[in-house]
Length: 281
Image 1 (cartoon, helix red, strand yellow):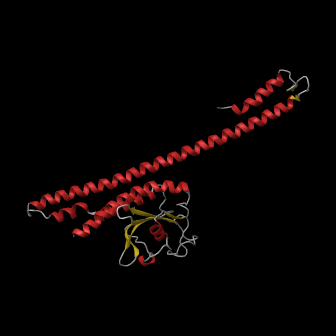
Image 2: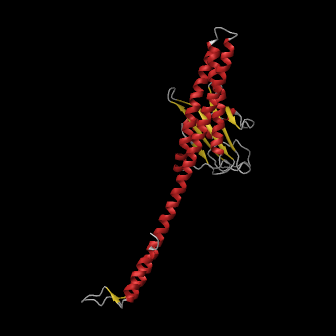
Image 3: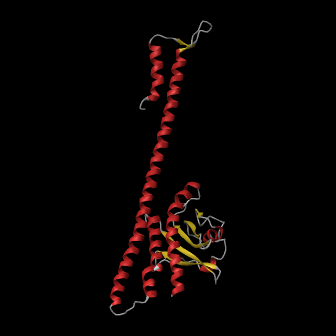
């Protein structure tokens, strides 16, 4: 309420203005000089002003945080819609091609139809691209570079290996063989089945250094857990050239968990289709 912090002083001044020179007087006590009342009222007004300022600032921060969450939500919805739209368009193209194929081949090979329709390889690329678009939104490319990659465990070679990445022309430089244990960020995410956040890859001594010595940045790795096989199917990596872009705090983890889980579910679906496609090839 505007001006509420001035009320105590105003009331005290009115009290004195009406000729009262003391307050809290009684038959057993002469009371106190009204100057003390004015002083106390001024202090009380200051306290009210401080409380009002703090509440207003907290409210502004809350509104600002809410606006950011709404923008992130709409951004996420937009990227998921893009993924579904691309898949729908690809299916329509495939159906038209199959209709043309029927004129020269009858009956049509069912295996060919299945492989042409699902195209999990292409869909995984689209999801990785959407992940990149989500995390690179509102960033200045001249200052901050964002990269996304997906890894999968290779049973024959006993290490994680890169299966998809964006930008497409910037494959991660670290050799796959480095990701055979939990000493890397991606490795820890895979073996511990938890989101791992590194705020600064240059200064964090918990992990093996795989980047150039002078390279800064932050990185997160998120395990895509398959409840059917009860194993980590994939690992999502998102890196930024900006230190502390990703922060290892409870609030940051909460904010990151929602989009990562949604993209993870889409990746898991395409990964399952990829495995089915490999079996029927």
